[in-house]
Length: 476
Ligand SMILES: [Zn+2]
Image 1 (tube, protein in one colour):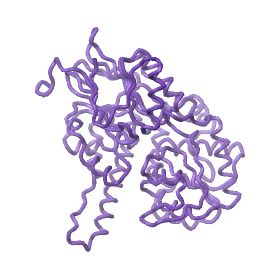
Image 2: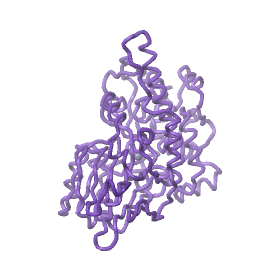
Image 3: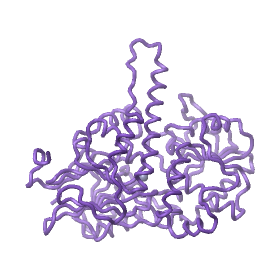
Image 4: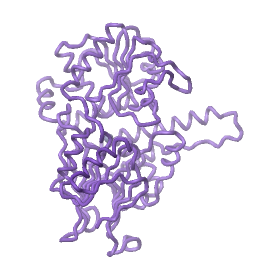
């Protein structure tokens, strides 16, 4: 099969299929003489029609890839895997065991969202004879079939994916199980070492170990650039800022709604609130984690304490738990979630989705944003054209569930919670893994973040570019 599509004289190249000059839909194809390896297969988010079209039609080169490496379980990196398998991708999918366990929950959840969305739109058009029913992008069976292709690959274990093509995963410190991957193609003097960063975390973040860049330096580096032009607030200020938001909102009797990804950010928030509660720095307001997915994901966290940093392991040893405290409640049923709408008095509601593009957080926002006593606490990245972005831009009116609402609640943005490296971390990464690189390719960033970072990296004379969607780079 390989011989029919590949020739030994074929050069190795990278095809930038997704997250090119954008932050969602991560998908990069490394083509080698002995076959091709797809790194990540994420879902596009953004303008609905555009995202829908791109998610429904994965590139044929991606479907035909011989193997896949999944750097981490976030949906913008993994969410199109079931579509790809449904359309014929039949290779193994390598990921760390924690990524595999998280992906099992995230992909099943994503399938349920796709099925729910399709059913909702079809129901709305039930009286329209010209309506052609919408098929979900994929369903839970498709997600299950995709999961059967997963192969666990622990950190720092070198594995031959294709003849002469080796992969090693390095801890990316971004979310549980996250990795960067070093691909080695060929042997001897013509061997190529290609480092793909995945999403890069930050040093000193709660729970996870610090990022461990692929070393020794690679010939080519493909790296994320989400915050290529931004410096984050100091991580140490995070607890102070969180305590301030909870205390001031509670004092005026308001609720704090936190749109948060079910993976990572939610657990960091729980852990931080647990620490603040133990230190007596926040009032005893009830905390609700309103996401069935977050409940399952938190269980996966508990099963992978081997991925925790020393500080979190010490906390676990001392208190017996990292993700529970009095007053914290995990909400699973829809009925209980709806009951939160009539809850009186201050409360913290952590709910998904992270960019406010669906899920239960929408009804909490609808219920709270018109009251200035409440606070919307933004702790994650909001891509362009999402409701979350419109909220942080403090637009006077925002549309939720098709209805325009006045945005009167306080909006607080805390960048210190970011799970992404900032411009200083990214530059350090480029100088480490890319020290001797022939080229550094920036992906997973919007142009206003990529251009300043690219200029900064290129000051040392290195070639640094942010390839356009669909671009192909031949590796010399
Ligand atoms: Zn991520």
